[in-house]
Image (cartoon, rainbow, N blue to C red; front, side, top):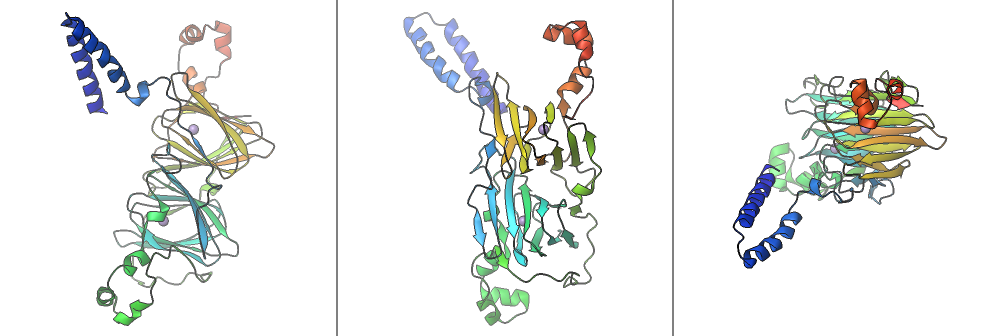
Length: 389
Ligand code: MN
Ligand code: MN
């Protein structure tokens, strides 16, 4: 960015110089040819009329990847170009379905369980291990690179939403144990893992990804190494069990790194809107916003400066992406309440609302800004309203 600006200034300076020495028609002609080139080099944010990028994607409407043990649908920058900072995956596991041992090289994994029961195992670089059971409304967070696996406990299918803190992440390009071992010589594996070479002739040759395994016992078995220390920073947070922030039009549960210390790169939110509610005009100074519609419908309107606004309607299974600093609001539509899963790519939650902002200014300034009378200004809200009925 800096080097861009610097080269802009260099160009402007050279153009001024060019004009100051333009004594011949040839020099003037050269200058007029130079101008369009310079304009085309303007940075994106200065292109006042560039349309806003699309901010809606139908993740559940996509094909995804189906295996014997479950399925996954994803939205990263390939499918949804605006989502540079976060990628989402909607995963389903059948009872006994096993998302095999794997890790993610470039992203941390955040998850919210919509339906069903899942057991996870995870190992941290310090050698601390943890296995925990998750049900609807629970959240997990696996820092970048930590090895983990997921199993569906049944009795029903499990459905959960994964969000990764890098939009270039692909669930279909993660580091899986079978992919690695299947591409390592059996002699090396035999030396490393205390089994004869012949034992490795029947392991999967390629990534197994999601396997149909057995439903694990209700009471977890001990980990193979009983001496491993317990994890000191739990990977599990019960988001749905939090006391919500309540507003006239709905409620909100927010989990930042304050409540869930291991969750160092994101903040998660469950937002419930009553029919007809309005999530007031606001923006987030420090983060992009990724939304997944769990139930109900809503209309989202974004504001991207230079008179650019866009509105999209969302129904269950669709995702929205709102860039950092963009103004926005959400109108609930339809008779069924709306539940939205939201992720921000910062561990600290920040917002500025229109009501709160206007309350933080003197009445005369607000009157001058809009041409309002003192009586009109007196009626404006003085504090954030959150979700209005
Ligand atoms: Mn994973
Ligand atoms: Mn927002």
